[in-house]
Length: 342
Image (cartoon, rainbow, N blue to C red; front, side):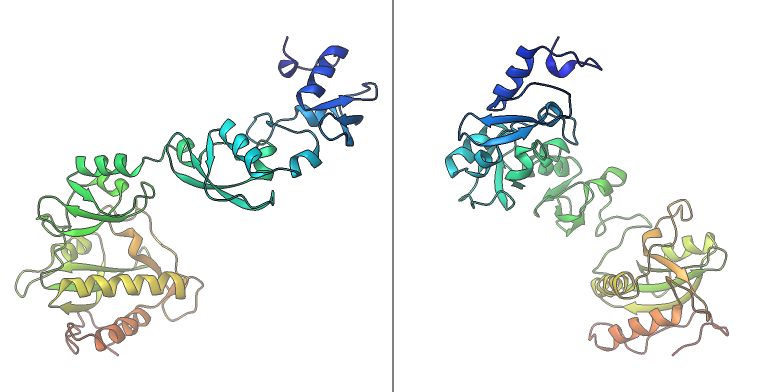
């Protein structure tokens, strides 16, 4: 029976205990009394006297692994660059750059399996923590593997891939438009915003609109963009109306890219400056667009909520300083005691 596979058995042989101490580079000086009772020991390398228990030498780390070395602290601290390189090689890493003689400082290592860089501390690794590569454990594809996945969806990867939920710069191979897509988005829909003919496609080169809508029952506000024309109403607005949304304000742009930029700036201002979280979920909006929602506050102050006029004033400032937008072209679609033009 292996020493580490024993269950509740505590009757250990003296030879097994001596083998454990020698595997840690130690020599037992006192008799073994109990599992957690420290025993006076001597380091076989430097002769340092220390106390170690059977429990300390056999305990597992947080991931259920045995530490590669838990012997003399002085020997562990007296490490040089060659010993660190040998230690990293044994666990599958390669030291990048020069080692800083401090066990608590992070060093840059390269995984021998995936050749990607990560930062680790020697004090953690010598106690059995953070021994594996984060990229390999989470099965993060490499840049070449990610490029092949984007190519299968009809896009060319030109940015640096991080993970499946992060949007990166891509080129649509069919129309050559540059945009940002993530693998999670492409797994749901491969439509291109520039050349798609669907209702949810957006062409930044066409005449566009930035709209602000609200939903009385859901107590929510939403900001969005859509292409529009002088005669045909926006399909996106029509879809929202069918689900009970009411139009508050609309801004029109000759250049759709400016409308997309104003939407991005306004949403960033809402999330970071006003601290407004996403109010609705995908179940509340089957037509899509729940990530651009926030809570409707009305005239009474509520935490994590705002009023449509607050967002309207911010967008008006963006339109006023822009030369491509149409100042004064703000259209008040629905006028009531709540919605009044500023």
